[in-house]
Image 1 (tube, helix red, strand yellow):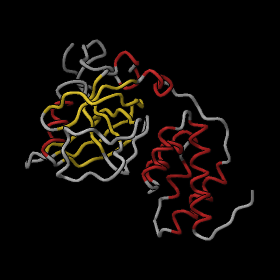
Image 2: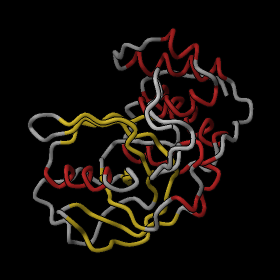
Image 3: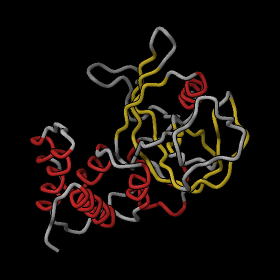
Length: 238
């Protein structure tokens, strides 16, 4: 059966060019990927990252990804990128990034895109490869991050302390937050969403990305919030 009535256009037997999100294995991930270097931006496995794409080289990246597996590599440069930077030069990138799959996109009349990436797996940057259409490409290794493809829960952590620290952090910056949404999140969803929305400096975001497990990420996140509180004149018992 081809088209179906209701909310599904295809039945379960329709061949797919790319695997479903929940079916992705390490074998489905590429050894080479187009890069979208974004300073101060964090994408974590199972996280959602909305992006507006307007630069010609990144429009090319999105078009190529949509024609293939819909995968791009989000990775931080060590510093903000100058628009005039020579992308053929030696890269100044952190060693670890995250593969994102385009799970929604809107093409505007001016040929720009609004996309949403869903984090799949972290990767280790190995070396630059030959670029295409102005954007950077790299050889990558995902073998150390097989756990990103499985929902391995975190060990229990002090959720109450974490949220108290978070409230202090946001209040000190005058940031409004929908606490009713955060309160309803499961622990592991919290450990994906909070690191992505907190405006930590770039190296601290990288530390959260590189934490080996959700348990380690919870520890790093708590430490960063505590450090921020002490820098703002707060104190917390040891």
